[in-house]
Image 1 (cartoon, rainbow over the protein chains, first blue to last red):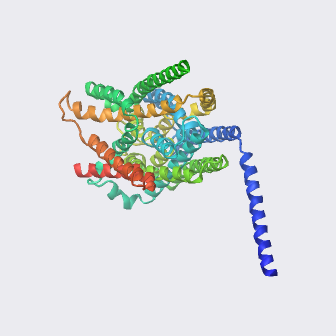
Image 2: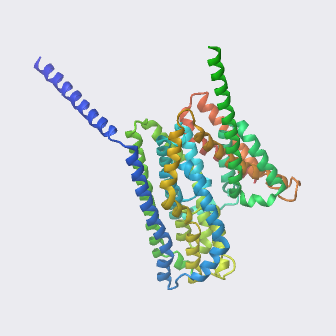
Image 3: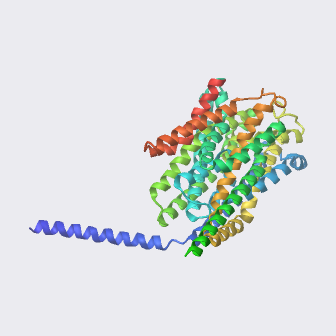
Length: 263
Length: 246
């Protein structure tokens, strides 16, 4: 009898403890503030970006001390004028276009870790699709940050492992047989993404795809600057989506007012 | 020269910077996971986002590793390893390194012409040319995303164009690439000659069909777990097709 009572007490106590734990975690959850989270993201993002920037620009000078040869600043300036300006314009465009897609946390991380078009953007969009979150929401911000942080860590791990095993891996990775596979990573990626996006937005995709195809056929040299062509193609798609959205909105408005008139 | 560029000192400098960035990624990962849980998001969804992103990344990362190997012959291994782990982009690095070597006067990017001064100058130029995204983030990310968030919350009542705009932007991005593959096939070797490279278009097609199959299996046959590996699996099949095409 007593044993049973004790047993009951233990169960009771543990359930009280569980309730207490739940209450504490609920309190923790309710203490979560989106505003504070965002502020923290910007603080960490800015500090880590500044440190990375200093490290990356400082590294050539540190290596210069080791090699007893500092960088030639006038040659670097000349080189910057010939190639850097294009990349500066491209960076501004990338920042304006991709930041809304990535959110604040994802944005900081993606610009620190690079490989945006060929990896981070499709990766974040894929995670967003799987999680079913909507752009501009905190949930989307969280999924995007999770996705880009994971993607960056996996890239760092694969490259570190690859560099560590460079000698044994080199013959495999550079074999003539496998060369076409690695030359076509990006087409394979965009083929898969095309299916995912075109099947749900076929009407939206037809015109941008047709316009881009005609443009690349008529001006084949543009294929070397595909990443630059994303901007007009994206702008055209957004314009078409906007027109479709307006049309739907007007139809809804019309049917609502017709319904009211019927009443 | 190559020996110096592959010295333990170079590995240490580059490795420490990569380690720092890995820690930053880890901090963001843990913070966002905790925030998601605290907000009441389903941990399963958060874990699926992590798993799908990890599987998604492996193949493109191997492609990036090839970029490291390609550049290691002229710049040593540690510097390309750093550049492609942090900030760099596969299509950017080779282009800038080539242009930088012309600017420093060694002609083409090659270890036979490489001098210590040329290397440090090329390394500096590679860093400076691509740092603007990061600078813009430091200066404007807060204001820009804040404004976007404000606009979204103002329009939340009945409007979700922000979401459609993101999808549309991505449709545009994909269209630019697919259009370039078709353009390359049709006019790659002379206007309307149809003698250009068909492989990228075929690979994209095979990958799309494979993706369709994966979607069918995960949506219609109840194999939801496949969703996490569908992009990586489709890419693998597409890349295998490239091997068969030679």
